Image (tube, rainbow, N blue to C red; front, side, top):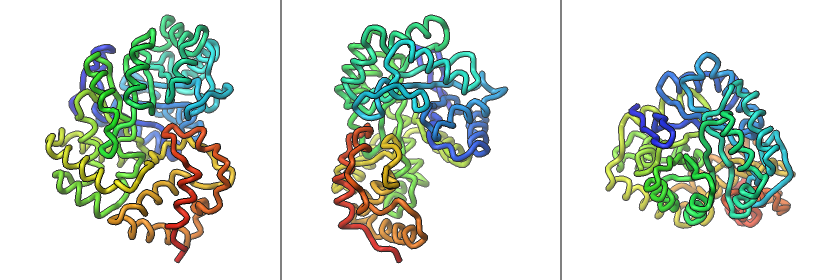
Length: 384
């Protein structure tokens, strides 16, 4: 893979990034990281919450003896994972609201990762002006990160957000430290943050595109998506999506949530094919807009909604509901659901939702989850 120079940092970054949210277990995590390093993937994004709190340790073990090959970025947030604030929880990395808490969180991540410094530390999950303003207050989060930066604990400072393009541009303009890199959601079905990407390109700020496969939705078997991939000249829709995102002007790399080594191979192969023609990207995004026109709310599967009090698998239900709304996908989605229900897989019955709205408070995409659960019931199939 041909790397891109990120001028502000001096880094040469591979177009495929490694998101550490979706590790399965220690053995496969280490194998996947080693496969990535062997292939030239060098950007690794991790957070305290990832992997149920195990991702930092697993990444650290995988990097033993290979630290110099990796750009390691960690993060925490004054927010609660959604639009609001919460009390400090070092285990999740949320509610980190004072300079001392930020410093302690940085040191905690370094200890779990087994590193003596971080290449980048990020203001994580800055999804609303409230969180941004809390991070910037005197003696707050950013003050602690800036002090750690001055002391050499982190080389660069970044921002991650699910905010709108307008909010992202505002955050970049108003921050006393002009962030070196921004991580934002971007995939062929939602390019609404393109103005923020263009702004970053003008300013020389790197952009990491998270959710390039729409939280894994574009990696699911689908005859429709396969047809769209073929029309774009790609072997799979994963290839089409990754190439469309990673080579979008202004995007430094596509941050793919990787679980197994074969995911690395698939992503690296896609990068080797180079950019899609601009006309193919335009056709692809237009086709997806048409396919998903009935889907008003698109879950990216980030998991920030947390553990449901009644055990619902919220991202899985919302993904299935989205597919049930698409005429060309609904039969396949219903068949898969019936098989899972017949096999006794739990947490897939939206009718048991109690509308407590805890998940909504933490959803960075601001989805009306309780309402969507009620709507899903009408389309939900019975077990075979």
